[in-house]
Image (tube, rainbow, N blue to C red):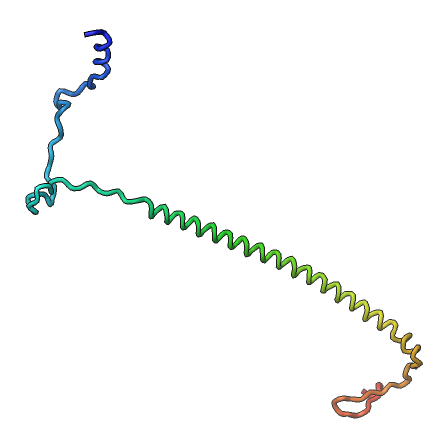
Length: 146
């Protein structure tokens, strides 16, 4: 035998086994419940291997949950953005309305100040003793008689 063959034989040799159990001996078989003795069939001594369940339903469930969460976040974000745009528009409307009210109040104050001048330009004179008509009673009431 050549030296190369001897080295190859040493490296591929089986590992050392304990003397109590030989390397080529298999463990003994035992019968399981529901074996050939009960049913009368010949090959019932060994159970069929368990079939591995498919992971596809679990993955579909996970993907569905992720998709629902993403769509929910998108809808929530879109709704909040729309609300913020509407709030900004309403705030600008409130600001414009407040400016309009302030302008109208200034116009009223100016008109009250110019009332006496405008009345004189039309030839009106201030009343010495003004009289009024009571709506409730229908009688003429003087300012001093109230």
